[in-house]
Image 1 (cartoon, rainbow, N blue to C red):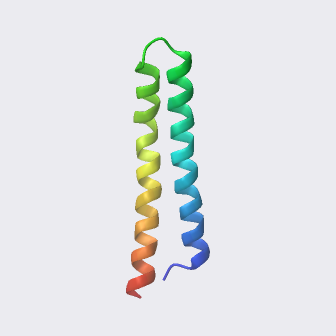
Image 2 (cartoon, rainbow, N blue to C red):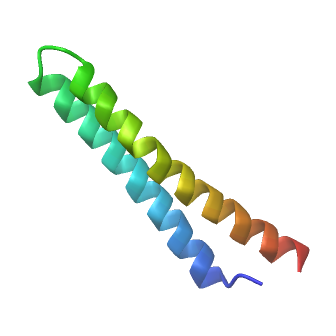
Length: 66
């Protein structure tokens, strides 16, 4: 059974990962003439965001099934 503290940490990690992805993509799209660096940064951040989301989903499902 996941504690509320672990669920809170998962939510913070997900928000931080999404925020970092947005900042990276926005910053690189403003600086670069092409969108390739921004799309590359987005592609690199997708596994980080998905991993955080899956961790949160698993903790929430453990919380409500136990």
